[in-house]
Image (cartoon, rainbow, N blue to C red; front, side):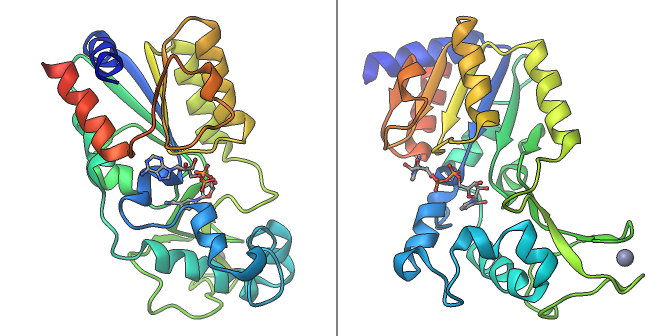
Amino acid sequence: MTSHCAKVGELLKIARRVLFITGAGVSAESQIPTFRGATAAFANGMTEDGLPFEEVLSAETFLNNPKLAWKYLSLLELSIRGKVPNQAHQVMAELQNQRRSIYVATQNIDELHQRAGSRNVLELHGNLRRIICTSCSYHVHLETFASIAKLPRCPQCDAVLRPDVVLYGESLPPNVLDAFEREQRQGFDLVFSVGTTSLFFYVIEPVVAAARRGVPVVEINPEQTPISDLADFRFSDPAGQTLQRLAQAAIG
Ligand code: NAD
Ligand code: ZN
């Protein structure tokens, strides 16, 4: 562990472009439940409406029964309301400097990387607080959903509003994917996967590509994941304290 820590610290010290791929585990220490944590709250993974979480938060449900989808989007909002960045978000932001660019490609929709000060954040699954109209260009950033209607409508055109997140069955935002691909083409010196089970190809692929090119891959996750075998370095302590130790090793 210590020697791994020193080695990754050395790599961080010389790296000019670093990619962090992050998932729900990064926000776990901000007391935001991970996906499995959230679904475990429902008996047999079923919501009280008798449908699995993936279904109530799907594009199809939003189209056919937007009020039902909003009910669960509001529950998600409740889980991030008032939550603040933790040590993991903070260390990633502090690692940015004149010589080292940090890119964060996150599956999280809670905006905590930006709140910690990370400048290059690629929100692969969107942002729950960004509300957009399903029909016109109206958009607004909402700090909380506390005072909005159960089925909010656009003040400009009366169409249904929605959070700018990727629902199950939807594609990733093309502008975010383009930006991610552009940065990958420029290459990274070091790639981290932190707190993600990473079953989506667009999260696994950059790790596979980095490993193929000989770019060191670091995984921080208490559990084994589909990319664990590709990682040159694995840390199974929580993300916050692990990143803090690695950042210290990069300074020392
Ligand atoms: P997941 O719940 O499938 O996996 C979470 C991962 O985090 C697990 O591998 C777990 O071992 C790891 N983990 C737990 N605590 C950790 C800690 N302290 N440090 C490091 N790792 C830790 O989540 P996922 O793979 O990110 O995918 C779930 C989907 O749900 C994503 O699409 C995401 O958009 C969404 N989601 C987002 C949030 C959020 O915005 N905070 C929260 C829950 C779910
Ligand atoms: Zn509108």
